[in-house]
Length: 138
Image (cartoon, rainbow, N blue to C red; front, side, top):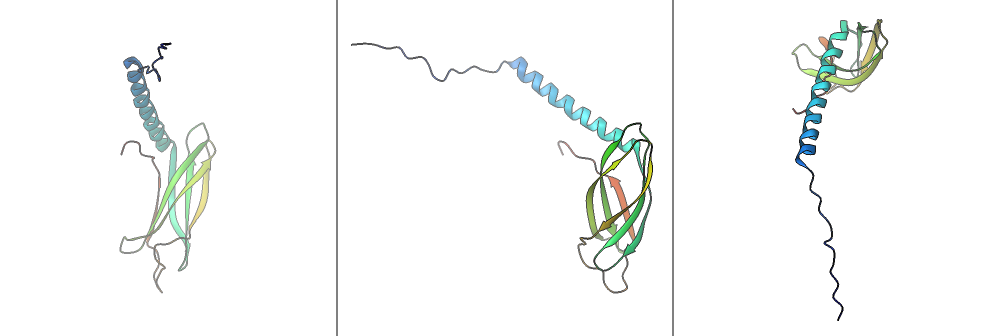
């Protein structure tokens, strides 16, 4: 009778510990670089003159000035929030803005999805715009 020795299948090749350590170090370095880029972007972009220019029961129009102090173009995520006179949030919107290097631009953004419609003779009290920082490990 024939006797056949079979190969062990599947062969298991363990990942060396130095590769695991290298991957962990690269992930931590990537998180550090991401946070540095977010902080630099916050220093380069200035938002000023935020005001409510027009409103109705279903929408609020907010005007603002955006200034890029850097020498490179930026794509920035901005978070706009609109509040009533009791400091309750009426609506918010997250949007992407591209701004060229060294440029100051007046802009307008419309918040058309409010949490609740404005009552009669009610007006939005204030609006705030800030740079949205993506969070890693939070």
